[in-house]
Image 1 (cartoon, one colour):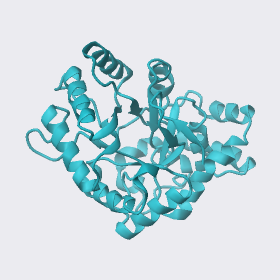
Image 2: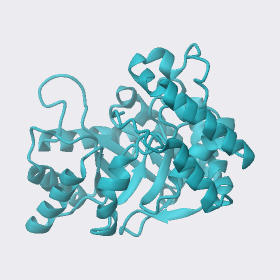
Image 3: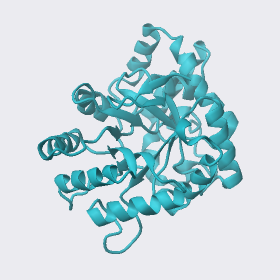
Image 4: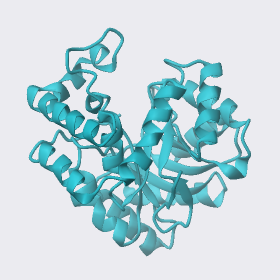
Amino acid sequence: MRYRRLGITGLEVSELSYGTWVTFGTQLDQTHCTRMVQHAFSRGVNFFDCAEVYAEGEAEKLLGVALRELPRSDYVVSTKIYWGGTGPNKEGLNRKRLVEGTQASLQRLGLTHVDLLYCHRPDPHTAVSEVVRSMSLLVQRGCMHWWGTSEWSAAQVREAFECAERLHLVPPSMEQPQYNLLTRQRVEQELSPLCTNPGLGLTTWSPLAYGVLTGKYAKGFPTGSRLEKEVWLRKRCIPEVQQCVKQLGALAAQAGMTTAQAAIAWCLRRSEVSTVILGATSTAQLDENLAAAELGAHCDGAFWTRVDDIFAGLSLEAEAG
């Protein structure tokens, strides 16, 4: 496993990390969650990602128990705050929501602090300056080492930086955008300049575009699959996309990779990307995905140019998850 710096923080995170969205608390029980975390850690993964909204808080509980088996100084853990339930002040980024939501997340995780805490979405009802003040307060209280954003626009992230500089507060250190062969614009065109100056780190998610880039939907939607359950995702399986995925699979096979491995390795080619968050329900699936980094490193520039040519002009920008 190779490690990359998270922007200018100096923190080292594994270039491939393990996320809990969709799986923890919905597909995997505690025994399986612990097995997956331990297996990932044994393979060099040191970054584990969660959020208060995943399985309505259950994912944080499961992850917290799994992490108790590991030395605290050897892993990096993150969670995200925005959706804490229904009712007044249960959603958003006002100070009450952020402070109480963070305290609740730490309790579920069984930790005194997380390494990274994200504002899971921009809040149209709370001033960015207020968010910066609240997150700076939480850093000062020791609830997390660094704070960041998830699915914020580049303009919103820039505003947060400017507020922090003007008010002498703690700026965001990272952004968590979706990034894959079908969703590229935000990372490559909007966020990339912020990674150079002032030095933002990117922890990207959904490298397989909800599974579309694995090729498993070429003949329909298997029973129990994401796209069988969630109709809104099916527009990612239009014929044009399916044809591109088929071509990617053929090209990947020539290089000794699966379609999924080629898609994951492609994400790692961007220097702005600090880590690519993987999702997996079995150790075999996780091993396959983790092998993408090494296999992709042996592919030359001509191979990646051919991948880019396959998907040229095809973009389905991110729906949030």
